[in-house]
Length: 143
Image (cartoon, rainbow, N blue to C red):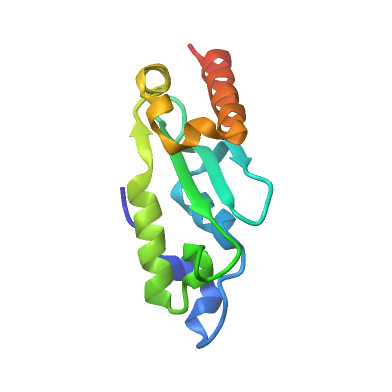
């Protein structure tokens, strides 16, 4: 997948000292055409869980993106960015962490067979909300 050009996501960054308006939302939107499921922890720190689509039916891919965030530059990668290069590295890192699936069957197989109990997300009720919505999406959209 082609890299996201961070200056197209946050054009104001081209001006010295400007902040990237739009937060993680603008960055995640640039990774896919549609946000299908989105669940975020409610607090000053936590995790975000996203299911995105890249392309159009038939042939679109489905991506699962899970990332953490905080409230200050010491505990949140986005808040810690201060240069265009920092934002670009963060976008590249998040984009690389997306798990892509070529179809709903592959997404469902991953959801059912992945060892979620071994992941840090297992203990989060927000993750379980996301997982339920992901399964509902796949089941409702299955061909």
